[in-house]
Length: 209
Image 1 (spheres, helix red, strand yellow):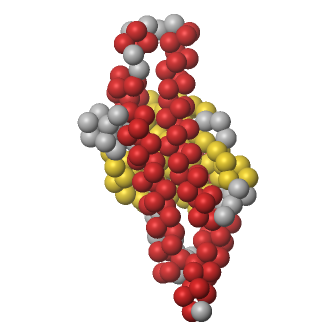
Image 2 (tube, rainbow, N blue to C red; image 1 turned 135 degrees about the vertical axis):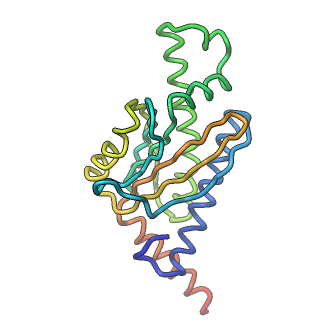
Image 3 (cartoon, rainbow, N blue to C red; image 1 turned 120 degrees about the vertical axis):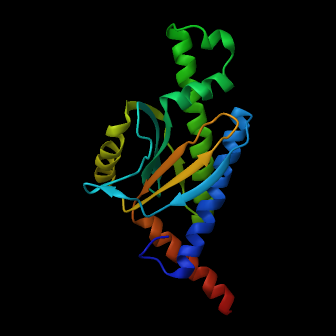
């Protein structure tokens, strides 16, 4: 999973990420009332002109819901949908009178619905990371950024430099009933790996006693 971790450390990392991200799938199901599954986790991202391919969506407008991590572990995550996927999600979760109107109040309701999804999905993962690593970690208030798909990867790379991120991975989900495939990109600082190593060593020490 990560080249600078041992097999045991990678095993621990994979378990906590899969467990946390499975909670994210449950959060999708809860708020959208549609079955959601974790398809896979990619920690070795392809690169184009030295820019990691964080997002694989290639056409049209793309919606990035960003949550910044604060506390003992710094970093951020982006929950990513295409414009078409956002419309499907809103159709599934919002009343018709909101969908059929385009005024300041309904636009705010549509935005709040998206940020609430991100709040629940990101929060479910942050909670598991905090519990497993024994850290105080919180997700900041989500923010929405809309841009063309071709701009997304450069945008996230620039953010990565600001946060001095050393760990990056992408989780892919599927919500078949809605025809939606969210991408969930995480970038974390180096101390994430340090804490994983520490946890793996503690487990080994217990096994040897």
